[in-house]
Image (cartoon, rainbow, N blue to C red; front, side):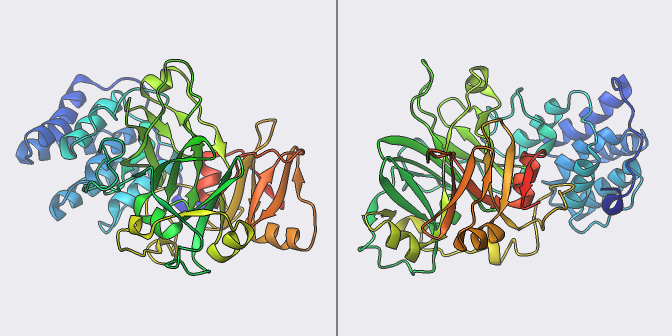
Length: 422
């Protein structure tokens, strides 16, 4: 971390002086509420920049994400430079500044959520119920550049200026899915003997599916930025909890999509499936995962000839491949320091053992080992081939809820992860 980002600045603790609280209100509340930036805001920003308190850069960073004015962006960058003791180029300064804040783990200032909520809800509609107290580190949350999907359930075909989830999608047989090429990537899910393929082409556009398979309700988020498709059971909830309807909030946490429940506006840690705000967090709701196998369509349909697959129309006429385009050179959103044991975009198969230990298996090495007949076992976890992909099962073949992801994502949300091979 020090090699890449340098030494962090000294950080004070304790409350903010009344004069500094006033400067923050003028610069970051009044400017948003009044949609203006004049001499009063400039003077307030100058006072903030001279405070010597790096914690305040978190609020500066939040406003930087939305600022269209080149001059204001430069002024905010200059203030961040003064507080962090490091010069930042104005090109993509928001990302670079935020990377330093994350890598150095700079604490949030007092009343941080209040300021962040004002900025985010004042500039983008629909987030009023999202920004709430809870078991969430709001420092890590940023805007992904899209609006919230708050359309009612089962209105898949309704347009929106958002990433539109698909609810109860129609499917066809493998034989009728002539639009798919054998080498197209699909995410395969098997529940109670039923198999379904979710083409990456569709999931790149939808990023969220609420479906039923094998008699079980599922919420299936796909984070293009993390290379991770996951499947969560959304039935058999505790008494008094309605089936969560998962939606994309338009927010990110360390480059992972932030999902929420449409019924309660409870926010989830998408990667871990744990409710972190709202009524579902109060019930400490933890969603259980089913395995998602990442493979190609030809191999999946050959091994599971009775599979169903989503209809082509859900791709909305698009065929993006973000992995080989937009994200080819690494994460495009701030993630801070990254575990150096593997390249950031190395594919891993992630699973949590019976003892609670997260383990990442380097996919390329695991495929070679399994194809030559080697056994791969860690604690109760056994890896096995499935339709060209890999799944983790228990000693008796029980599904352990594994999925594929980029290394940077798995290692950030499971910082104590073990890595195979060592």
